[in-house]
Image (cartoon, rainbow, N blue to C red; front, side, top):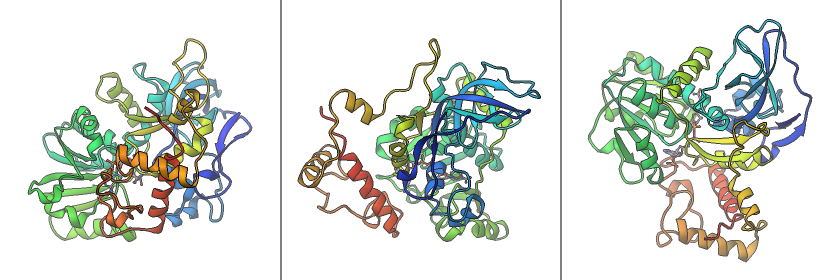
Length: 415
Ligand SMILES: NC(=O)c1ccc[n+]([C@@H]2O[C@H](COP(=O)([O-])OP(=O)(O)OC[C@H]3O[C@@H](n4cnc5c(N)ncnc54)[C@H](OP(=O)(O)O)[C@@H]3O)[C@@H](O)[C@H]2O)c1
């Protein structure tokens, strides 16, 4: 079978599609034929494994111990082990399993797997578990949330879009979402009561206070959010923060002051996945999909995820659905452009600059959408860019921005 693998840590280019042996389910496992998978932020970070080097203690110091890639899947059960009681051959399922970006994956019946809602396509179902389970387990400790004012920072990401929907329709909180200009309407449509454009308004300076601030992208900090929290308010973040300070801040604020910091840790549990299926069935949850790629385009998908600019989720179409099943996912931009004769091979030198100029004129800078008039000739570094973390700019971030820029100039999307 075909599967995405990586034999070493590094940039997205270390990912490749290879022929590997099809797994055989054990007694308590099912074999799922995967129709769709995703590339999550966690998957992309795991390939580089740079930001949290200590994670290599678990994943392999010099090279990855497990070479398979992907975590979310949606597909059809093809074989069941002798001890499997609930799932049957032919069931449409979704869930989380290591190595999900492959044509087949084995999952324990007691693992994070559940029947797929009939309201979702395979591509949509694959995009449900990661962001929503993370948001659910991060927000639960702050319960009860009914009627409380909750602010979600980074509301357009995978975790953010899930958090807004869960808060509005499941926890029944008053949600204020903070996102980029381009995502304001989309986030509002998810159920947010108020949406702030973070490039125009700094929520820490508007005088409003909240019971909970959920930093769904891990780019803010307890220090800067403190004044926007009500007494006994909680700041929850999904990231360890600068110099991994969040666990220490969480410990200190437990005993000092009335406002608390908390590190949200994702827990993936079967019963929560079932809850999500119910929410989908009752129309209270729907995953947001930004782009779809084919399995062969996994490098491009991972590159895009690494930009940190995706809205919701990025889906990978894995294996062809049988006749009568759900349709195949839409082609990616590159594939579509190729088919329509609008794709040109990577450009170099002057030609690339010309296209970059055109893109800049049309859309502004890809990082901050600054207009051409404000745009300096050279790429601004994060420190001088409203998108970046204030006062901090790493060589890696600058390099990633440049990679995105170069990558974008390879696609000529003519009018
Ligand atoms: N704690 C855990 O157990 C755990 C597990 C897995 C992942 N994570 C973390 O969860 C985080 C979120 O994952 P995700 O998949 O939701 O990320 P994501 O989808 O890649 O987030 C992208 C969104 O973040 C926004 N964004 C980017 N830079 C921003 C900034 N400086 N300020 C505000 N918003 C910014 C972007 O919005 P704009 O385009 O509007 O800028 C984009 O919509 C990741 O950082 C990951 O490290 C935590």
